[in-house]
Image (cartoon, rainbow, N blue to C red; front, side, top):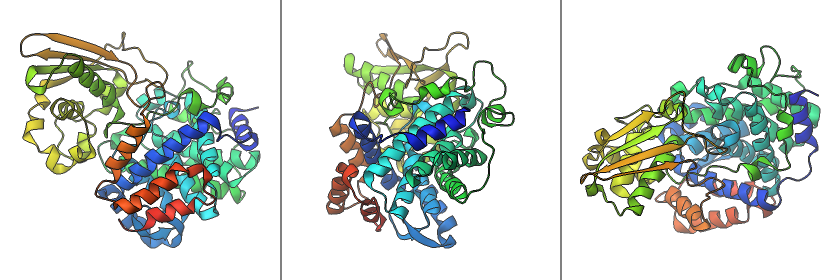
Length: 457
């Protein structure tokens, strides 16, 4: 059985997935992504994406922070852009990128259109993470390092499979959806630091729903889009003897990917490539009772995957600041935490923070001796701090705060949610939304939550 057929069969025939630990982790992911969508709703990238599609026809699916509903694919596009606009959404080992910012907007829009229950959406979401793990296993990390934005390339294929499961398609239908998702796979990391990056998440969510529509309509496709010549692996990586899908079906649960790898839920609202370094700076400052006035300079050492992502040592815009090691570390030193407000234009212009940029150095680890990585810890960092009185401290961070092995507490989850909705949603509406999120799996109709998010904030 080919890898795509194996995946499609598993997605069509597996029993309920939203139970036990998997259910709790999936619900927390929905809490996190709804907060990110609310926070990203007013962002210029989201507003421009909405302006581009709002005249394409009304529909039943809600746009966060907008009274005008659209068809499910275009609602997914706008909400997906919002989810990823501030780069505060989770990362996922399975696709070496962002997962929930693609899966959730697609499934929430489709679920609202079809009157699906909360538990059905969670079930499809968990299956989508499983699909992204299998698809990613055959190409990563070479695919990501080649320059592909895996959030959208792998994301659209996995989300197409998840949406097909939510629709209840059989193995043949899911196989067609996966194949058509492959036909939509696109997105380069060259767009990092621009509005096109969050749009990639929205595009993947929208295209996943279109792939499922085509599949449900019976469009024929190639049976094996992942492993064949001119398939996903061949075109998006090229020949690499260390990669391939030979044993990828063995990754299908149990244990489920969400239980084995979890998600990296962000505590800092910037690129995940900075997070181990930021955590390291904060840890050293706490351990040695350092304040900003004590520190002379900071050096961070990272692997190529992080070094290439962090392209802006002297950021001049909100987008660039999220991809700047120097700016993230400067915030950690001067403020002790990173908040969404720290990435607004007036904050980026703060000379007290900018004065630190030349004093933060980012170094690439040797190609023949990179920093060691682990599952769900692909972006480690080593941090060196030199104090003004000549003391030297260092720390190696392999897993950032927010991963399965070092998760956010419930208080931290809701504190982040509060930061996301602050000054956007009034307290009474916020309490109503929170109560729906807390009982997500008991919702008979996911539209009850989505319609709360539809009104102008």
